[in-house]
Length: 127
Image 1 (cartoon, rainbow, N blue to C red):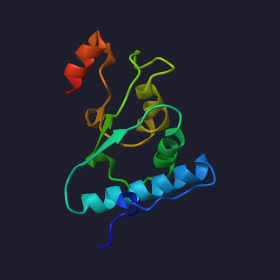
Image 2: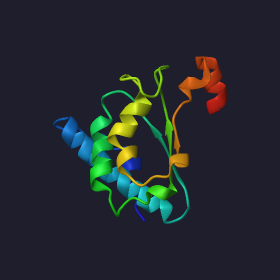
Image 3: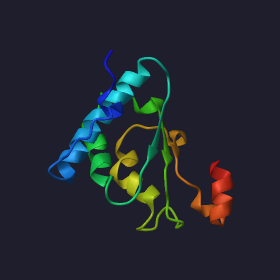
Image 4: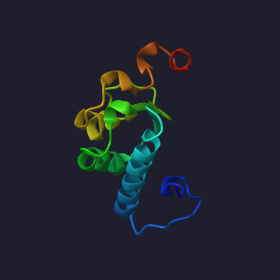
């Protein structure tokens, strides 16, 4: 089987964020399905900020029946140290754009525990 597009080392340029997001959603969905053909769990680290928002919206809107959400575990690659309901929270952004719209089990969504009291305590709890 040829390598998945998501793992290729080819550099691709896109005309805008929409085109990039659509390609990323397509490639990620294909990689998830490919990977889950040989194992029972897919772990994904999510990026925060505004750039991945459209990708997450597309995954939520276009993955029905193609992504086995119950086999995915989502982790955060970064987070602002604010409550999860804060407007700047990456956990809030992911919930609003992705996890509130797909059938992923709550215990498969692993946001950084910013309620832990301090960044250090959150890091220890997340490890």
